[in-house]
Amino acid sequence: MRHAISDTKAFPWLLLLPALALVFAVIIYPTLSGIDLSFRQMRLNRMDLGQGYVGLRHYLALWDDPIFWIAAQNTLVWVVGTVILELAFGMIIAVALDYELPGFRFMSVIILLPWFLPLVVAGNLWALMLDSRLGIINAALQGLGVIEGYKAWFADPNWALPAAIMVETWHGFPFFGLLLLAGLKGIPHELYEAASVDGAGFWRRFIHIQLPGLRIIIVATVVLRSISLMNSPELLLILTGGGPGRSTQVLSLYAFQKAYREFNFGYAGALSVVMFVILMTCSWLYVRYSNALRAD
Amino acid sequence: MRRSLLERATIYLIATTFTFFAAFPVLWALNISLKSERDVLVHHLDLIPNPATLTNYIAIWTQSNLPDLMWNSAVTTFFTVAICMVAGTMAAYSLSRMQFRGRQNVLLFFLILRMFPVVLMIIPLFIIMRQAGLLDTRIGLALAYTAFLLPIFIWMMKGFFDAIPMELEEAARIDGCTRFGAMVRIVLPLVQGGLWACAVFIGIAAWNEYLFALMLTTSSGSRTWPVGLQLMVGEFQLPWGALTAGGILSILPVLALFAIVQRSMVRGLAQGAVKG
Image (cartoon, rainbow over all chains, first blue to last red):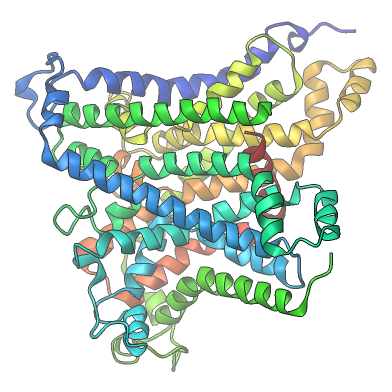
């Protein structure tokens, strides 16, 4: 056998090198330097202040920042509300599509579509449908007698966040549907047969076979989706910019605006570090919990 | 399994409702985009545009910089996919096929990367890109996208590699192939379908991305279409007809690619996620 570089011990690492190098340059190094930044003075528009270390000043300021607490509360509502709705919609559609009736292949492709649409388009599609003058949803709700006149959903502090949650749910429920459906396909047929011999109906089948079978996937999708929702301010940036007032302000959006509008990078860094700690705690719980699930 | 007629009817009703829910906003935008400016205001509730007109499409294409924006997006997407396919395929092959110390840790590392908060790194990344002269360039943006999409690309590709029997490669190596030769000549052709599916998935993600593009591009020379379109909405109070036409044009490439590879892409996604 010839001896080539590809037969040496270092070869696996050589293959990994480009990917690892990129990830270190674009993710790891910036993350570390972001953590460092959170302990510094760093304002792009006030470079005269220098870039010295200010210790925990940003963190202490955060503690006293009322907007931070509002944003934290909104984040909780935003993430939990969206994930619950998406999981519910995803579960219903996965169980339905698992019947594999004629036409369901085509339907599953259509249902998957929102997940692949850009948030810029998704956001504006719904802004159009919820428009206070031309919105079809306003027209439909008025026609049904639910509302009296056309409503400016994103201008109403009580409705802006629920409306945004609805839009994000439309965008994200196919993700749950797809993965839960894949999980349902993995449940052995014998279990269903045994259940039907016992005369189990739809609900008992769902509670005793499907739900336990999907346990690991439910945990995985909920964690992954919560992380991405917490991380991404895009949709709220497009729809409301945090308003009206602070009613749709979430942590990721607040950090982004601190950096992008006020150029206060140090403070934005501290905000992101707090998010990072929350996310890492969640992921750690997830890894531990999913290992425990797999063990039994 | 026996299923009553009532049960099947209910299931059909549910599936149809969700299909309608998923498709309606897109169809509605298509409807609005085909109406004249006057009809958008006066006959906005009509389900079918009458008369249908392409004026909005012509207007947004000729009177805005949408073509430039889409070209920038296309170039950025191309670089992203190209770098991902080379670096990601190599990494996925290594993680799927080779035994070495630290393999499990590398896999876990790529998984955890997905949990890093974007906002935390976007600020330093802005500074780094500026120092490296990559700020406001398409290649700089593509490098950022690549790093972010590599973990998911690698996990998906690893699934496709895992599905190919080891024996094929071993046979080739006994015949005198080097490891690298076996990878290129035997394994790669077999995972081709999966590779294209992963590439399309990455491509769609890069084409759609908004936040990084907003932060890392500042001029029309590298600005991508999501940022540009949103700017038009904010600054010029784009009328709905033109906006929906722009939106439909921008998602056409996504729809086309999605239609072509949806089957294998869905399989890859599901595999990667279930195992991960």
